[in-house]
Amino acid sequence: MDHVTLLKELAAAWVAEDHPHAKPAADAEIAAFESRHGVRLPSDLRAYFATLNGGDLGHEGSTDHEMISFWRLDQVRTQAELNEGKGGRTDLFGFADWSVDCHTYEIELHSAVEEATPVFIDYGPELQKVADSFSAFLEGYLAGDHRVLYGISREPSA
Image (cartoon, rainbow, N blue to C red):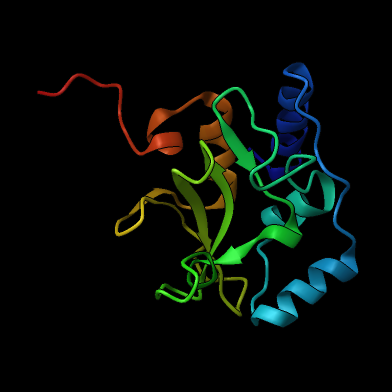
């Protein structure tokens, strides 16, 4: 599914549960973020921030029906920044959290837009890849895919 359709579906889902989004990020804010961190946002993530830009309160603010808080661009931080000087990667960027930081959702960003941008759940000492891209993460989110949302499967174990 293309990211324009995904963003329309995400906006509709948030409206249906009375979960307002933030004021869209301006092109200058997106450019400043990229310059500050030496990264290029992939087109799907760029469109997300330019359209919805997270929940109206963002980090540690309003949550959706799954208890996920989507952050505004001005709240996005590297894993190293989120760990407050205790180490961490500078190419992983937290963009959402579950249940007030029980775990964070982080996307790998690079200086070249053609590089892969997988999404991980950061459980603290452990990372679990849950999607190959931001669009794939949104598809899983909208479908209620527990592997994407929580890193677990509802399939019975063999």
